[in-house]
Image (cartoon, rainbow, N blue to C red):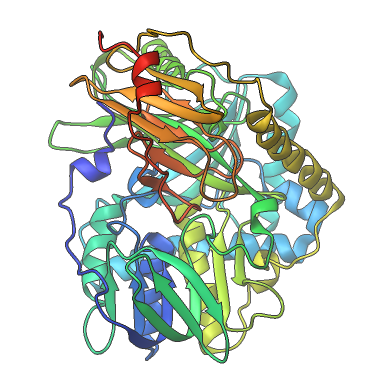
Length: 514
């Protein structure tokens, strides 16, 4: 069964839905780490805030993270210095090092027990071609004030040839941190609203947000912290970010974990950290990635991680496994700040590139400073309207050609052939078919019920692909995900898929035997 340990080990929340029109100083779309932290900091600064969450808070990306609180984001600092200069690289390093301390400060001030444990963070390689890069990264990190050390061995039982260690990093339980913090936001004209998906945003003197229930929020300022921005009328974020999925298994091993957080420099990615639980010590084994909606057989990624775990540890059990996705930017730095250069009261935070714990804290601090003070010491490196370097421009072309390919492939007539009569769909299986010129997705659940949906994504019209590991319909263009009933699992889509009734045509094609 696919379930996140973070969700399984914490209770669900029960904040109300928005049931009337309201006015507020700052409306925040999204109740994950960025949204809750921003609301917390802004309320402390004297603002009334309203958090609008499509589902339940801290259950999406925040509830499926690896939860490493680290400024070590792969091999990033040497590249930043070379491509953007030392000043912007220093901003990024300082922002993330500050975020580590700020998370601990907030937990201490609010007496939150969240399994916060100081840890060292390692990046290692087993290939000669990465040695020079790790050496250069060590020097770059040291030059920016980070406590970094070049190594030839690491504590985990892996044969490596080079590694880099960052000291004074940490790990925690994200929901044990966020849920108590969220409870401090409500009251004194501030509130969290769950099951209140925002489907429209209108710009005027103030901003007006409309939920799927038709309720309106009027706000002087708006923060879009919905992971992937749902607002398409400006900014062209759909052309500047792309989503990737990653996979996690939580194992129990015979040996004790030696401590530390680890990730390799090469592909496929492999990441390790431990976590205490009621079941005893868990080791999180993370990795295998692909663009959302473009994995051929997503179940194979769990299999690959399981094989790696058995090669590295004496595995006794695998009680949890889950997957997640994050938005990747063209140059590897998140977009945090004004949504566009000409929207001074509309803000965004997105594109955390799988390093969302510290970057979310940094984003909340930047957004607080921009709203309260009008500027932030880290605003330039995160600026969503920053000039892209040549490499980023190349990435822009590559990523958007990829989107165009999947958009066109799904629309070409004849790509999906009509199924012959009496086609069998067994329990747990799915098929895509052409019925009366429409592309229909069919899935039969374990109880034998057939679920039929129109596979055209409601975001921008791409055709969805089946995700066998998660039993969902995923968009290969912009990462929206839907349940087999058509409900939204992840945005940027704001409308569910339309269900296709089991017409005589479909019934004739699909046998009732399974």
